[in-house]
Image 1 (cartoon, rainbow, N blue to C red):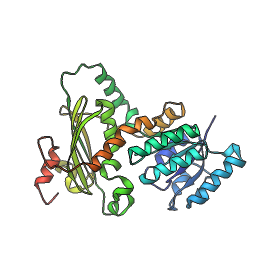
Image 2 (cartoon, one colour; image 1 turned 180 degrees about the vertical axis):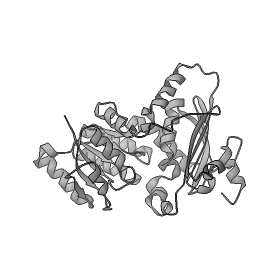
Image 3 (cartoon, one colour; image 1 turned 90 degrees about the horizontal axis):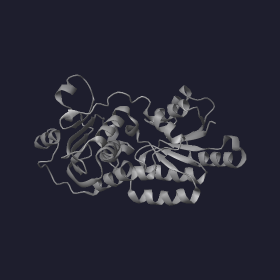
Image 4 (tube, rainbow, N blue to C red; image 1 turned 45 degrees about the vertical axis):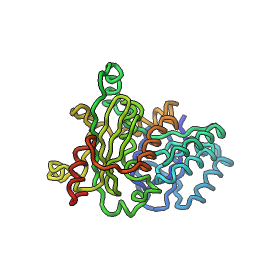
Length: 323
């Protein structure tokens, strides 16, 4: 039996992945919300979807469906809105009798998870999140391999993610710390979740460098030592990447060998939706470790370069032209 969905943030970057997932799983989209009216993407997936630019009218419509038209009442709310709205929109979903499927980060602070857990109990509904790297076939295979091993030392991991963004990024909500949570939260959280899923809990963390355009540091996990670097600065791209005209560089190495997961991204959101609808979604407990980590990173002192610093970051810190 198909389910009815509503969606917030339909004009945003990640919304098409959710629209595709809703359609591919055989469900119906009833209503959408976004203060920006560039919502033509809807026509590629669904017909006759109510679109609202005002939350108040969207709220009233969803409530009316719940009370007067049970065939069209909402079963799930997909949340693709800016990070700082996730908590409020998840609460809204529960209040109107729907489960929530929320993009990363689920919330910005650990105590928000505590409050949502209480509301789940109160309303008898669930809040799920999108941790799509956990359903990537190559990464599932790697996790199974690691579980079979009897490690005699911690793995040496290097995480590098450089995704070039222009001046608009810092002007938008994504560049506002209180709205996005900063780079570690906005572009790094799914990688941090992946690393903890693969290598265990955080035992120690450091921040070596932090600006609005780049951040890096070190993590000691139960089974790995991680040097990490995140940047939106084009100047940080390795020369061989920028010479090709590429604007993004993503790499995770384990003991100097690349963990290959560059392909297979097209349908990961659909897989997460399918698992969620089958009762196997990623809930609050799954989201908590990465939320706690990025919150701690925001509060951590910047201690400068040391022996645990990512090599690209160490190079950047020594060169004022790119720092």
